[in-house]
Length: 204
Image (cartoon, rainbow, N blue to C red; front, side):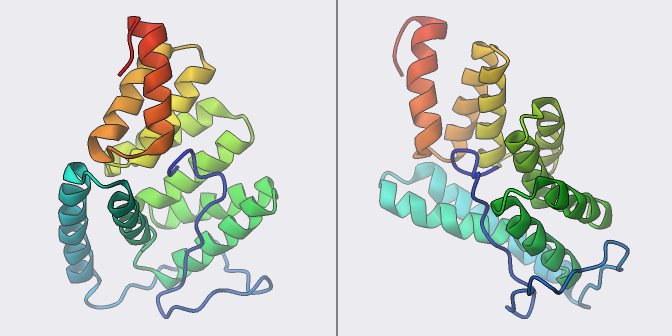
């Protein structure tokens, strides 16, 4: 999940920058094809993410923070596999068309093929949330956070689910954790302002 749960999910692209067409259905049983230097690229991506988060956590300007947020989310969408990228794009398209059964089926394939790809779990958590399947969404969010503890979107999504369950104290903690990594996350800021009053009797 990203931003205020990112119900309209950002589209992914394949490694060569081309989008898959609606008729180009990727097969879930297809094998992931990694480039020879994929491990080196993944390591470089981690370093860039760390740098972006260091800047985001200290950024005082909201517009600049939004730019950093976009850069981070773009990196999160890079699976390192053309097969997974195609599956992700098709899942996004299905989710945006409210074809959630299809989206879940495609995302099941994503997490099976790439279990260490946090954004696959995050997208499935988002679709489960869209279907009001909050427990399943929360399970996937926990997997996201085990892979990427700084995932402010997943933390915000966890906060939203906790509010649905009436667990305002846990929701407040989740939103505050999201703000540690993204101090300008609008949905989380609003939620903390509301919850800090109901839980602690005071504002932020």
